[in-house]
Length: 122
Image (cartoon, rainbow, N blue to C red; front, side, top):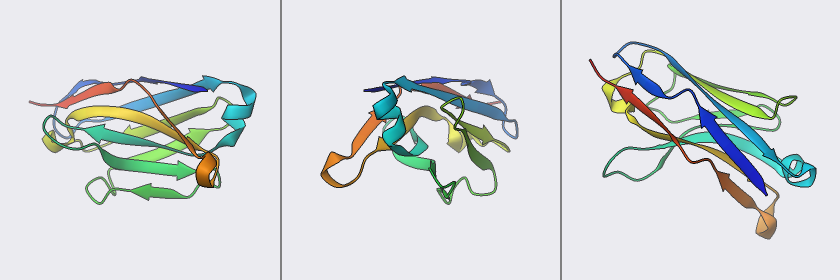
């Protein structure tokens, strides 16, 4: 099993910045199986959507709505993934969830953090 703990959420004004962090912990076997980590978000009344992902070979993927504003990164030594959010908009308001995916095929596992609230408001 893998446990994910997010931090860094809060209230910011439009145009401001915020940095989210996610720390992964668990068995060495499970941690070593992780091949992709990322961030998803869910606003009230909406479905959870992908924000950004980063693979074990540092390939990144971003939602069109955040390209150029958000940057995802990882620190393998610390088993963490971060999301730097700049030029925040009110539309970015949501609960942000850290995600980790491990394994391949039928042995794929998905792990989720409990979420951290990001509110962008003036």
